[in-house]
Image (cartoon, rainbow, N blue to C red):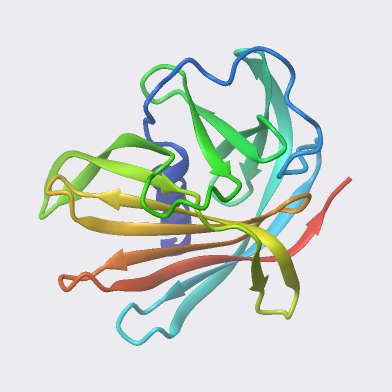
Length: 223
């Protein structure tokens, strides 16, 4: 049950928060050859690993999958539904360009936002930000989350030895109401494969980031 709740809270934290709305990606169909191979029945199988933030040891692990089960057209773009088989949560993605992935949510009305971008080379500027509910010491307030996409051509070696060259690394950092970092989320995306690794870190009082959980891609079925 803890695994289920953890996976559900992860989707809520990043994929289902109310992002800042905008004009959207514009009219026209999204490109087929983008970062994510968005085709019905494509599936990615992950190992969810939970870590002791004090020792760095794995304390629990479980499996889940994301499967493309449907699609919808919004704002002139086709978005595809990725369904989590454990939590029942859905992530909606679209290849807006060959190097940019967009998503959509409906927490406070329909919002469009950038989810992944190929490396921009600028480590000082976030490419997008949005408000987010942050719980601090039992009280809730509105903090912010910022997306950074300055990494490119990163080589990632997964635990099974699979090497993903030229992958794209994005960071999403959550700031509390005092503008302090609380959570960092790191995404590795390989063009034509999709999300190959996700890691979530929490910050301690000294500002050190500690690994809390990770998704490791174990296999995929792509059409």
